[in-house]
Image (tube, rainbow, N blue to C red; front, side, top):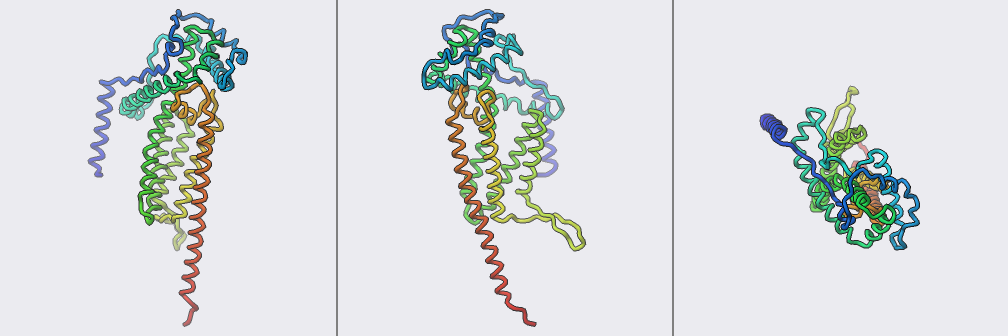
Length: 376
């Protein structure tokens, strides 16, 4: 691509951003994923200002007294305690949060010129995807409301907090807030689903002779995409750790894309030279990549809780529509699958490491035998 084409593209991007900034007004969608009518169809609206529910929440410590004897009692106790803790914290910080003046979501203004440029270009796309994911979550939650698990929790909840409009609003707001946390998780999962699937298909469909070269390209692309992901999250959340991680991922991706080595010259000068990675090195790079991924997933599962959900929990809850209980069975299944796959990959990597080392040793012996003794 010539410099003239690059300049034309940049000018077009700036012009489009100016037009969108002047004429457009991107608004985040109003994600009311659960309505109070879903929780209590016969509820009667109450004027805001009542503190009865806040007092019931602050005094609701005898959870075991109201739980119905059912197979879901243990998980309901944990879910109710999490909801009570969340509600007590919200009431202490914002007593009228159940009845806000405006339900419109606030958009984040651009703090820098570069941030404003990309905000106007990407806000419409992001908010459109957010709205589509919100509709999906709304359907999954509505489906969960028809289950026996939800019916058991609902009975225990209304026995604990009272069966009125404010209690129904609190339960709906809690599920909506938890479901909103899953929007970005689902979006990033979709972003990564296609590159990972395409990379696996590309490697498996390549003839055996060029499979490792294709695997090297795929790994480089994955690391570069990871670097871009970390950069976007770093700018969105203003976190230094994400920015540092993006630099590490960028260096790993660039090395796999164009591997280099520092070689010493005759006069002691160092020169940078492009090298070719051996199959065992590429296999080891795949093992390191998958090991880091397994560590990340297992860390999320081990440290996440129903009060502070991790991405794995949010993704599983999105599929079931249950944002009230901890998906313990799903997390255990993911841990077992990750463990089995890691062991299989480790054996495969060890096989290539030992095979390449043995082949290299035999090649050196064969070359030495062909040279024979030196005769002047």
